[in-house]
Each structure stands twice: as C-alpha cells, then as structure tokens.
Image (cartoon, rainbow, N blue to C red; front, side):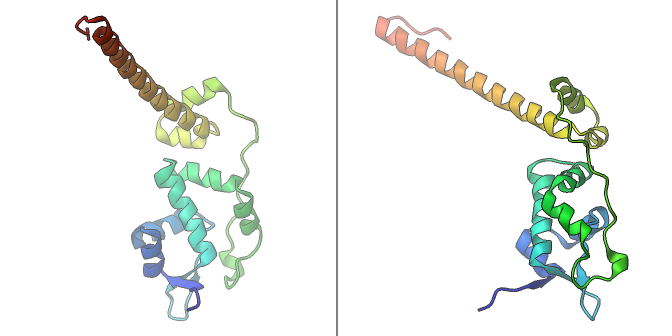
Length: 171
C-alpha cells in the first residue's frame, strides 16, 4: 500500500495529535504554514507540511517556546528559510509567505540569559537570549535535582556508617 502524500485537516491532526482549531490558529501565526486547498476548498497538507507542523508543536509544547520564540527559532532553521524563499508547489503567488528578518548571530551573554528568564514571557520571546534563559532554567532544575540526590546519598551513607560503628543513625 502506497504512503499517503496529502492529508485533510482531520487526518493531519490525528497523525500529529493536535486539534484542528489549534492547527488553523498556527496557520494564522506562522507564515510558513500555507496548506493548499482542494477543489472543494478543504485544506490539504503535504508530508512537508506535516513535518513543519510537527516541528512547531515540538517548539511550543516540548521546548516551551512562545509563539514569537518559535517563529524566531524557525527563522534560524536553514530548511525553513529555503522554503520561505521559494514558492510552495500548488500555491498562487499571493499566498507566498512574507520575508522575515533574521536575528543577529551574536551569542547571548550569561547575564543576559538570567535577565530574560525574569522578564515577562512576551518580552522574553522577543529577546534573542530566550534560548539561554531556557538553558538557565533547565540547568537550575537539574542542579536542584542533583543536590537532592546528593543529600539523600549522604543521609544513606551516614546510616550505613552508623550501622557499621554500632551507633544509631542521625537525621
């Protein structure tokens, strides 16, 4: 059985585990998402469209980006940039996505990442240091988890020492 090349909105949403209203909203927010329409006017998504939607879903749900932050991440992706430069197949010229400005390639400083983490989500999404702020937040969670594990290990080691020395363990 041949693999499907095009999907209706319901089929695409089922494969991607998202609701149709979410996908329609993303189409308004992400210029790269421009599905073709069938003769009856239904949205039709290609495999390439599904790949792009899956990437948007990862950025928003798994990596925690805001819509604006996800847009900037996609702008930096060379495959996405190439798609915005050429007209998608089956789409009229007026449906071509608008050109988007590229972010500066200057690496974020350590203090800038901490500032972005404290800023409101809307401001942080406009900052090129959003990724650095997310790394700081993730690192902070990992450090807390490691400290907790070390405390537990020390407590356990003291209990073992107390047993070996014949003394009751202290907490």
